[in-house]
Image (cartoon, rainbow, N blue to C red):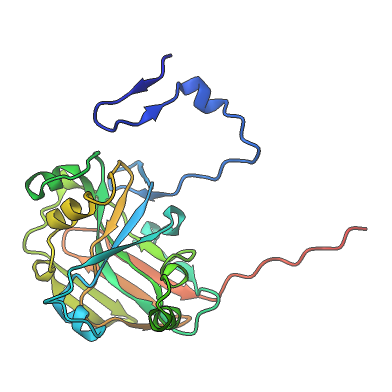
Amino acid sequence: LKSFRTAESRAWIPPLAERAMADFVLLAPPVASLSVQGGGRFPVRRIYCVGRNYWDHGLEMGGNPEREPPFFFNKPADAAFDVSSSVGGAPVELPFPSQCGDLHYEGELVLAVGGCGQDVSTDDALQLVWGYGVGVDLTRRDLQNEAKQMKRPWCTSKGFDFSGPVGELVPAAKFELAGKSIELKVNGERKQFSDLSKMIWSAGEIIAHLSSFYRLEPGDLIFTGTPAGVGPLKQGDLCEVTVEGLPPCIFRVSAPLTMPEKKPRL
């Protein structure tokens, strides 16, 4: 087998044998992935999120969306949390994060990228989309507010473990984006609702603008922003997010994870 460089990705890919026998000094971590409708899994490379992409949410967060275009931030790939097994069964439990006194939900449409591209035009952008899903950008709001006041990055408020729950993904060919709305409920009570057409930047515009900063690759996820109505989640709450034509994102907030006690050596 020979190494090669693809014209599409311009990424050097080592031979299969070389990848299988890499001399890692530690056990390589598992690849984060999400379930796909019809079978298979979608490997997650990066997670990009759009801030303030709905007029009403921009206003409720103290901004002026008429003058502030959406901006981007990241979550680590392993923040993606597959909650697809909640459909038809008991809700998946999502641990309440540590160092958090105010956990908030932000329901969002998620784009799953399957193509490669940089400086992509808006007209061509949707050709990079492999599929669609429904997710929640969980946020340590108390830490985010503190970071804003001190003009610090949002890493700890946005990029923690389990902060990106996503339902089952649907291939793009099986989903029509036009005319859809998004709804989030907590314990059966509606908290967020909006037509997806009310996004300040459309899915194609988001991809085009994001690709001017980063080369997009297969496995990238893009959380497209949340409408107004963001609010708190506490332990025991059931969170459900739906978009017509897509499997829901459902989970129940559970107690924080605790590390098992280490037994002393005898």
